[in-house]
Structures are given as C-alpha cells and as structure tokens.
Image (cartoon, rainbow, N blue to C red; front, side):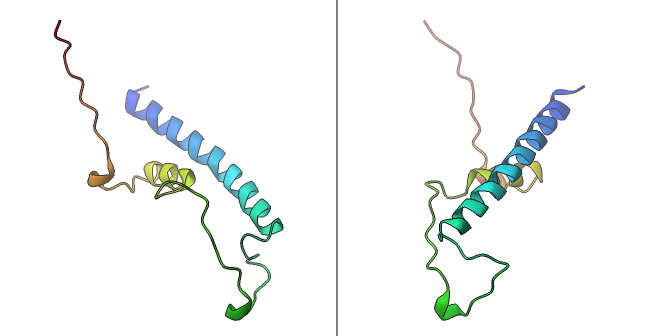
Length: 87
C-alpha cells in the first residue's frame, strides 16, 4: 500500500465517523430547539433564528468532507516546510 492510499483510507474513516457524529449533533440541536426540524416545515415568520456554534470558518465535518472529496482549493492548504536545524 502506498502512503497516498493510506492517507485516503484515513481520510475516509474520519469522514465516515464525523458523518455519524454530525447526525447525532443535528438531532440534538433539533431537540434543543436550536435549529428547525426539516421534516416539520414552518413559515418563514416562524423559523428559528439560526446561530452558529463553530469557532472555525468551516465546521470539522465539512473540512474532512471536502478533503475526502478532493474539494480543497490550493489557497486553503497550509504547507509546512521543514527547516534544517543550525547549531
């Protein structure tokens, strides 16, 4: 197995785990009245005022989803270059 393949498998596993976690978080938010239940339509005047809770620009699920689906723009990638140590 190549390193690239192993990274892809790791990314897929993380994505699948976060998918399950995201669904549980969604159900919890609906139960707490933080977001509307998509299965119970309301008029716009009755809609819940949505407030995000994520401190990042992009939720963890979406970050991993986009990485897994190869949907990350080059300007979003942080490259860490190793610098040689000089003593």
